[in-house]
Length: 264
Ligand SMILES: Nc1ncnc2c1ncn2[C@@H]1O[C@H](COP(=O)(O)OP(=O)(O)OP(=O)(O)O)[C@@H](O)[C@H]1O
Image (cartoon, rainbow, N blue to C red; front, side, top):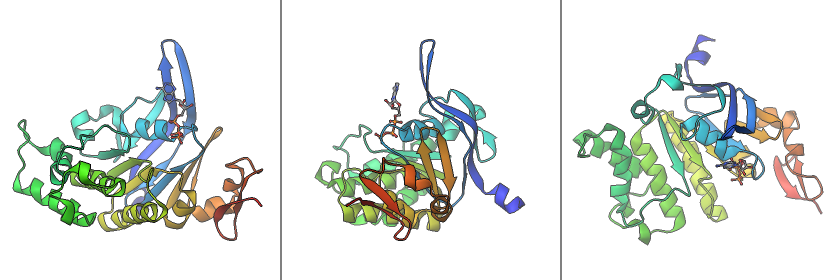
């Protein structure tokens, strides 16, 4: 029991997320109570516009929640400085403007920013973390290329390596496989699985690849308009949680194959 409690790295308590427009609150989700443990690979899934990015931005500190608490490593996020937060959570946003003129190793080294001195010079320890990140993601041969020379799949791996170089117990990624073909989607998600196992980091990512997420993830956070369901893929399948994700006229969930398919 104690063991279970101590390895919870992220927890939300009655979290309400959304947007504050002057006096108007636009609530995207409320009463969100989720837990993520170290080494867990967690997919956040749900239809377009349900609030996956809003949720990830809220737990990573990019935007403030409307109400409730976020507990990171047993500490209320409110009491964690932004410098310290950068040592706890790394974030990969696919649509983030990143200069593609940077070299691969240079971009990955930016992950060390929270730890470097004010002129940003890297210590031997920092350089080692960068080398390890390049190796873990298997992009060492690309390290001397410019980012504009890379394919989307390769660039996605560079962004993941940058987050790994940041060396945080929690990694958050928003749609890390968008724009990738089926093979490279599977490759990136398998990489995330491998990283969560090897590095014991909690890896939380939003995705539309539900079939792949069901095969690989330890936990699924299924966002629906009336709340978030969480559980292992098996638990959610048993609860028939996936059967109402999409309107049933076109796509149905087949519990036998544990996958969605087009209704014929
Ligand atoms: N800055 C904003 N101000 C007000 N509403 C916003 C803002 N950004 C997003 N929204 C709204 O919040 C809702 C959730 O958006 P969000 O991007 O979190 O959904 P999502 O599940 O990530 O969608 P998708 O799968 O399409 O990426 C949407 O209705 C969106 O229009």
